[in-house]
Image (tube, rainbow, N blue to C red):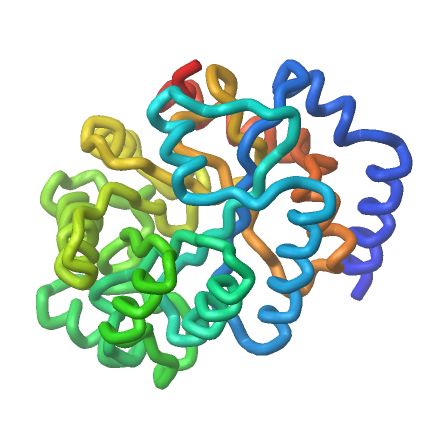
Length: 289
């Protein structure tokens, strides 16, 4: 409760002090860019928060799309004086299907980074599947009976206009993995699994857990050389020529006050994690200008 109150107070102070405007100048040279929000489990309370963030994007920003992220990766970002907000989801949990449906009804196209080996399985089945391959998987949620999306739901989400992309195959921490074979298991098998599910090419990959420490030098080099569009999960505005080649995302935390989430998406808290973005940029380079 104390932490929640502290975040609520910080949000109002940051907004009143104009911190987001100052940080835009100091961190991004005054530029606008693409913000990305990342969701995980989507129980009903989180669906309500999702609706609120869509409304925020329409009122104070602009709705982004997967094509906007593609433009950043490929050096053809179109700056138009406003930040855009792209919606993403990690893990491929069954609870995300309703989020996909609601966003499609609101004409918002999102990216769903799924663990393909979780599709059609419970968490317990997912762990057993990898154990049979001699791999100790990490279940995205603790409930052993919680389920991943079904293959039919994945195909429906693509038909809704969403993009389905890849997440770590066994959901292990790539920061602890250095062996090329194990990196191949986590990355290449995930990409191939998504392509098999959707019937189309998969070129997008989100790093599990998403912090700089969650990708080893060997895994970072593999991803950088792979031609994949790579997404991290630490807060910041994505700006050509200034921010990491692995895109920054703000992880939605359901226990944070909505006022705090809003100010983060507006840039008021970017400086708190700016060192992580700098570390990643030094490792993998920056987005093309």
